[in-house]
Image (cartoon, rainbow, N blue to C red; front, side, top):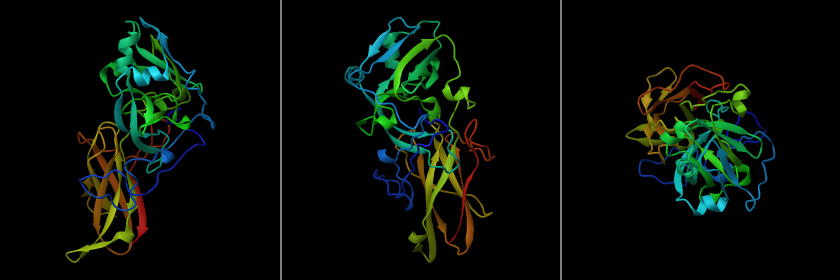
Length: 323
């Protein structure tokens, strides 16, 4: 469930042009789509076959330390509450630097704060235990839910009901966290007194699973070289992502040269990746291109190389090629 760290089930991004147009600039040819086609949104599950849930009989049971135990049908959630939409980038804690386990689409659902108002957790409750049809489970802080109205129970992606493979009928969205903390195929939520380690935490992965800032070179568009004022340029581009913390700057370095600032395209939302572009003054030969990003408050991404386990991979993405 979510971006769990091990599974044979994955899907990669395409390098087609973005279907979302913007006023900032055209992405460098070969940059991944700004908005991921649903068929290409990555998946990582704890089993090879996703649960099959009947919408007509499914219920979300919400109980435990609450004043009002409730049961919700899918129609209840869709029809009885004002829907919210959010463009979201989701990434997997087991993604390598420059890997494909990261995607962006539009999520639709009900703010979890709204449901809390209905069930009214008791003073002794501190966390929600969220359980899934595939026996996955995770814990979510009630304090965090009360602080962040973006946390939602999601029933649609890209304006369509969630597909079976992506968590039908219900999954949760929590900004700034890797997918391993965000259950799919939700069947029960229980207000509990204490936090406990969730499914992947028990198995040695991060207890917090907070997204680590990353930047990626998707393309060095050698076939799109253009000339301006006597100088040839090679478009380069890719993505930068820091959860919901924002990206203020992306820089590119060629070989051992100075870092050069790239253009940033206005993101689809505060919770998505940013598309960047840099037009490099062409020099024939074999070169190494490296990218780095800075969060909205100026915090640089982690340069040190760390493995994916337990907290997520870090380091700078580089591409070596002859141009």
